[in-house]
Length: 86
Image 1 (spheres, rainbow, N blue to C red):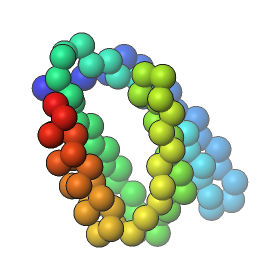
Image 2: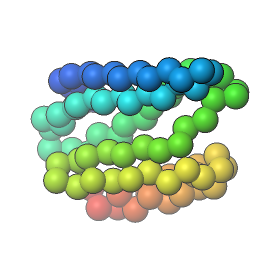
Image 3: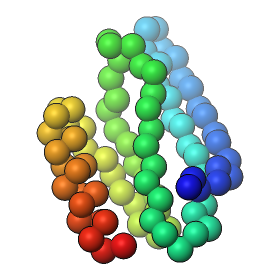
């Protein structure tokens, strides 16, 4: 099941070899169940992500940049916790 995409907005600023991108998407989950979202961006190996913020309902969630393996472990733990609630 997927949450319907309502809108997408992209803002791109290029300064020399640096591209700063703000990518905003709005989804709406119309079901009574939890829906997992996963983003995969085809970035080159030299690219870097320096921040991420999500708004879910009234909550503002700021992402923390961490090493990939540590992040995978944290994600699995959080997913298990959420699955125990839903």
